[in-house]
Length: 210
Image (cartoon, rainbow, N blue to C red; front, side, top):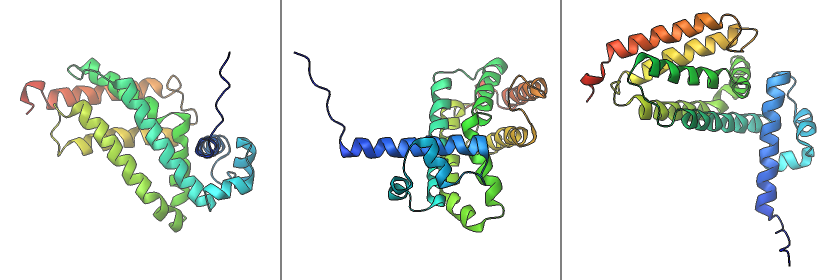
């Protein structure tokens, strides 16, 4: 006898609906931009009614903030998985890690953050609502960087080095029409990341770690 499939619980259905809405919001923000990411567009993308959306997210802003938190956690987890066990002993090692960070920052999902940050410049309510998510993302990234570079970089310098790298890559994402790493100015960025890796390795020699 075959065992009949178990029925989905209410909690399972709720989690599935929320996941579908968050993924649909990511798609809308990436493909349409902030202004065109309406609740109707998200519901159409997710195949969910607006009534269902508002049961989980009382406002459009609440949905957008939850999406930002979702993308942040997912991207940091992906970066950690990609760099798990990675060495940071040589320039090549550090360059490879920076390359993984570049892929994360330039990923289509991370376009969510760029769309929301640009919108928040002229929307004080959105700016305030996003603050906890921004602080959470910064904390997650610092934790990931500390796990990778904690034995090389002093704790006081780690946030600054991470800021230099992320701000450079974010600037590239904002200015480049095509975020494909192989597109121009891809080679320039590759060289910039290697130069940064050379500076990190030379400025913080492994034998001087605590």
